[in-house]
Image (cartoon, rainbow, N blue to C red):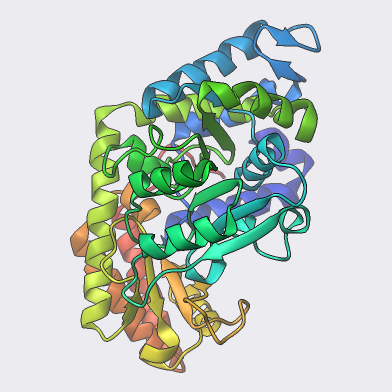
Length: 416
Ligand code: DSN
């Protein structure tokens, strides 16, 4: 980065700082991961210079010999990974992907049935502060006190509300969804079915959990969470929705695709097709289970208990008398990064909720296993229980740093 260092030392310094932060901290934000150096290399290329509105073979500007190659490879690899009939790799991220689908298949005021945000759903699945909630009419379903979705109740709501779209998927839920039930409910009321697999895409690609692609009409995802690709989104669908979705993306919603990201997506998909990715995906779930089990032993109440994916949600307010916001801050000081999170029907606000969400996709990438998860859970407990003792927090910080050094990241990436 010698050019950057010379021309823009402030940005250079921030990049260097971020690299050190990522290398030296225990990253437990369930939606984050570390891309490979090959993915990073693809991201920082001259593809960022190119405009390529349209799709391979039918673009609006000339000079598409290499962009077409890259986009076709990304599509081909995604199809192989997920078994989808049609793939669009151009969404800039998950929220645009969801909005593009809504605009492709719905009219303003049409009804969408999605998971309630405090029960694990996502902002774009109907939160009132989003643009989509201003355009469409969202109704929601919730989880039961035992953490499960009651599919009988879901069917009742769907039958009463008659949504045009039945939406599955989550950003803070820990259970395996019954894909077939969603499909049957959508079929029964003549609705389109959609699942947002942003969180679990890597677990599906790595065959650690079942693949929903055959059950749903439309599947959206981000590419940067468990799938371990660059920041971005993707839409997969049955052939009958392909043309509407492609048009809703361009010219409907986005302009030129970010070809450097699409190149990096193609690289990440190739990585996810390797047998080692299956081992990774399975280990992520083993690690999440180990983390949850140890936290429970230490007195943490976990929500949707008995994780079946990469997410653990803990009610720190009722277990340890600390808010999610304060826990996030204290743990950051100890070298452990995670996020505050609402719990079902949280009586506290989203900026200072009762819970924390944590997950091991990133630490698993650096090679940590169940033994390390046990250590991490114990540090979390110790830091929270001794939150006012700076000496304890600083000792834990030293210990987390020592563990990170044992599992090095980006060995060839050294910024001077
Ligand atoms: N920010 C992502 C997450 O953490 O789940 C989803 O929007």
